[in-house]
Image (cartoon, rainbow, N blue to C red; front, side, top):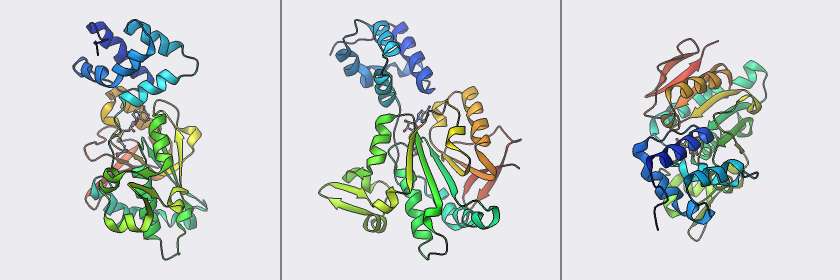
Length: 280
Ligand SMILES: C[S@@+](CC[C@H](N)C(=O)[O-])C[C@H]1O[C@@H](n2cnc3c(N)ncnc32)[C@H](O)[C@@H]1O
C-alpha cells in the first residue's frame, strides 16, 4: 500500500489529533505507528491526504472516525492478575480491610474503579479474587461494586463481552481460576455470569471529570499514565485524589510511581507493593 504519510507535518497533525482525543503523546520517532495502525483506515476513508483525513475526523458528527483512531492508537496490552505483588497485598490486606467499611462508615457499597481497564482482565481478576476471598459468606461479594472504564469503545465492548481466546485466557491465569470462573465453548472461554454481573463498564476519557462516576474506596489506574505528559499526569492525579474517599487507596502500574502530590497522598508499602493512600 502506498504511504499516506508524505512529510513530517503529517505526523505532527496526526500526533496533535491523537493527543487532543485521548492525551496519548506519540513523538515524531513513533511516526511509523500511524502508518501501521491507521494506514488501512486512511486508505479506505477516501481522504486525499492527511490534512483532509484529520478534517474528516474533526467534522464527523457521529465521532466514528475519532473512535476508530482512538481504538487503533491506544495500546491495550493487559493480562490476568498483572504483576503478582499488588494482588497478594490486595488478598492479604487491602480487600479484607475494605470489607469492614460498611460496618464502620454506614455506606452499603464498597466502590472500586479500574480506570483504563482495557479488555477487562483487570476488573474480572478483581471480581474473581473478591469472590474467592469472601466465599465464606461473612462479607457478600456483591457489596463490592467494580466500575471498569476506558476511552476505547472497541476495547470496552470486548471487556463487556467477557469472552477470551485460548491465548488470552492463559496469560496470567492459573488453571484453578479458569475452572472455577469460566465456561469453555470450543476455543472461547466466557467469564461466569456472576463475575460478569459484578463489573459495570463505562466509557470514560481520563481527560474528563471523574465526578459523574462517584466516589471510590480504591482506584486502579495502571499502565496508562506512562503514555501521558507530566502536566496532564499531575492534573489526572489531582482528579483521582478528588474521587477517593479519605483513606482510600490508589494503585498504579508496576513501573509507575507518584513522586508528586505528597500533600494529597501518602505512599504505603503493603507486602511488596506500593499503594498511595488519600490523606484525610
Ligand atoms: C496498557 S492498557 C492497561 C490496561 C490495564 N490497566 C492493565 O494494567 O493491564 C492501557 C489502556 O488505557 C486506555 N487509555 C489510553 N488513554 C486513555 C484515556 N485518555 N482515558 C482512558 N483510558 C485510556 C487504553 O485504551 C488502554 O486500554
